[in-house]
Length: 318
Image (cartoon, rainbow, N blue to C red):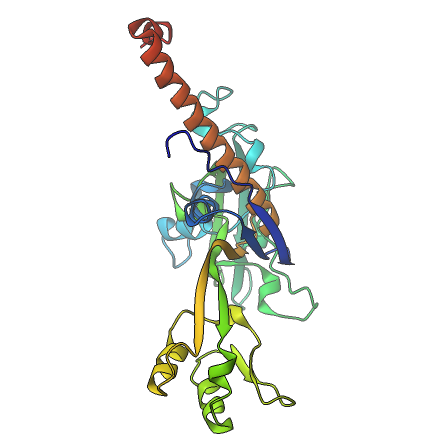
């Protein structure tokens, strides 16, 4: 109906939260908003990544372009990325992208002086800004593992040397995957499962067990006390319809009904470590709000043009 309001007030409930992982529920909204949030997290939340590499000396087995590409893919801590300027918009350096407001400088100097192979890693990168450094993948349990050495850039043998200068800049995943803060972002509709108890009572224990085992994931189980089929983990359901096909094969269509809640979604977010998973979600919401404000502003501009015609466009310089 024209003029009707479909305004909603989405709610988020956190289920699990770690530095690099988040699982939460998004309710009271629709799939368009859920997918917009997912796409913004992947492609439009800014981070900092190496974008320019100047090789001074490289006598390793890898060529300059290969090393520059590997450097660009090393995740850097990017808590201050939202407040930094894009190099193309920076007026302090006229878009050159080499000033403190839009870039961070790194240096690397390594030379192998022994017969043992030298691993040059992200830990050998020295930053001009202590808040922007390669992500530390040290095992929190404190075990001695290869991950504690950082991301390997190249291996050097006796006499081989690598010296370089690198400039890291702010960017978004839409421009290049190296700027994406997300390792993966997925969401699923929350399933709603109803068992027809009267129809289920007509099945033997063997048939119930066969029905439970027809699901590839452990969605159903049999209560040892009542011998009834119960739903133990509805979110384990993968919308494969195997239990529905099993019910039909048993001559019991309608034994179970499964619906996807169209206004409830379960998100799983994994971060590369550039920003915390929780901060990635908050940044994505802020960017989405800015986009919606821009749409609202453009609509107001169109209405002004309709009302004032050429005068409104002329006042905006159009």
